[in-house]
Picture (tube, rainbow, N blue to C red):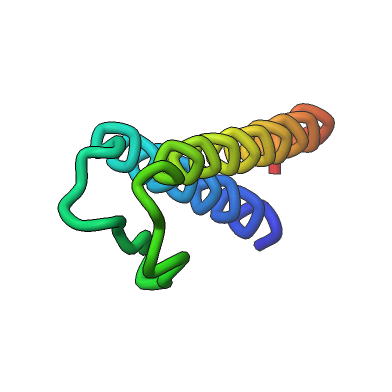
Length: 93
């Protein structure tokens, strides 16, 4: 059961990484080309900030990219640990 839990967390981290990269790319492509004075930033049904000024949008995009790198690194470390535990067992269970 622990094996399924660890790989499930790995898949969850990879999915979160992809979603964070996607949000960062959306904000990066938007740039400072917005209607009005700013935008609202939402991620996974959560409101991050409802009044982000135009000049701060690239900073938010960079933040999403940095967090996505962190989750990707955590997923890779978890996968490495899972593979080492798998390799150390006789039957691979």
